[in-house]
Length: 330
Ligand SMILES: [Zn+2]
Image (cartoon, rainbow, N blue to C red; front, side, top):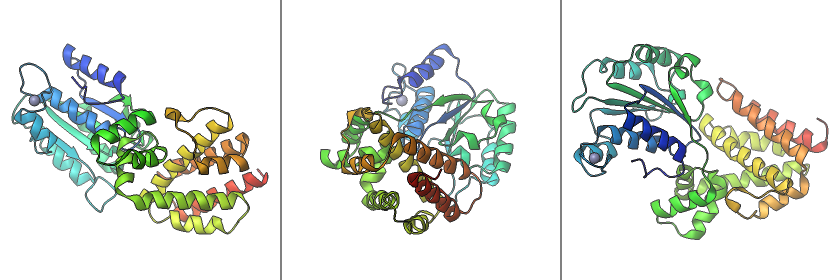
């Protein structure tokens, strides 16, 4: 039924079973890193619920399936922050809610997907809460998020939660090969940085400047670890452009030091990928304990990102801590 979704078999099997037994919940929370397949799964799930085919659902070619695919089915809404804005505002949620009491146009099911649900302002979340508390039978909500901890506990507790794991590099490579025109070498080149997310892999392939930015960051961080203290400020300066950049590079660095940690323990990298030159350089100057402290420092920064903090200051703190760890001051 949901065979188009690759790599999240446990989840898709659960969802299929719910459809077949009539046990579909009224609210779901799909969490996991960006680009891992949450939205695709939500849309396939919506198709499976609404498809008009008498046999295999979703058929993929009836008018319903194709409208959902193209984002213009009246009973499947995707809400996300408006272009140029970082939050989903209460007015967007109110607008959506005002339509909820009207029966679905074409069937007996409406699916509302909130993409980046953690971007809802607290007011927007509270306003959504009411609809989750007193659900109408034909409304189904799917909240997508890479930061479930930023969503109100009262909302989370009303949703059935599924965590989407990062995929194996082998599978990411396979998906990128199917979905893009890039050659094997280019695909191999982004696998490490994609961190188990096909969506991130595509993004990197299409935006080669980001790959360069990451390479620069690793190079500067290496100099910092070798004792170049000025890099604390130049790195903090480059990375604190905006919250999205900070978040993206942070996820990348966490993945990076996680991999270095695996290699320091003589373990294989995910997907049995061979370490590259940068991995080997880092291995020579770090030990496992120091690497763990660096990872924790980066995770701590991730937690602070949900608050309104000075990014530059946070990055400076992170790099000072990393420098001190390397010198053995911690
Ligand atoms: Zn169909």
